[in-house]
Length: 225
Image (cartoon, rainbow, N blue to C red; front, top):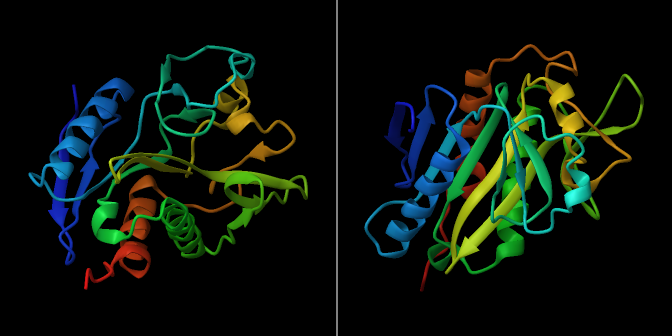
């Protein structure tokens, strides 16, 4: 069952859905699949859905069984690219369902846009997020160790040029929950959050920042002419 959500449409016709309570992962997966089919059929607008999940581990198409170290929470096959990921309260997950038939059939460029969206969102909280070659996600310097840690993850799927799945940004999740997996198959770097970096922010404030940075990255749809 999907909890109630607030919805609105932006100036570019994209529908925004903000769920009021954690959404069970299977329900979110089924809802995305149905919406992607509706977008493909021209029966629904593009959608960005911001939500939290109950504590959950999800496996992407490249996930290795040995990287599930401790199955302390429910596990699900996600069907997206990537490896193991944790979702839970205190983490904003953004499911992005866009029609790349309208936006340019370039999956690599789309992933760069998702990264830029996260980087711009973090900058609103004076956090410098960066890309790293060969490592998926957005990375920051961890002041506690001086090393690098992941603060946001990406995992996408594209079905007939309509996107689904998307991003997750750690606001104040229980970081010990990541210990049950090797996040994204990378064991030599840790995972962090805005709270762990000393940033006081709520999930709602981060959602608002994501909405505020959307148009700068995704607002302009290329002309078909």
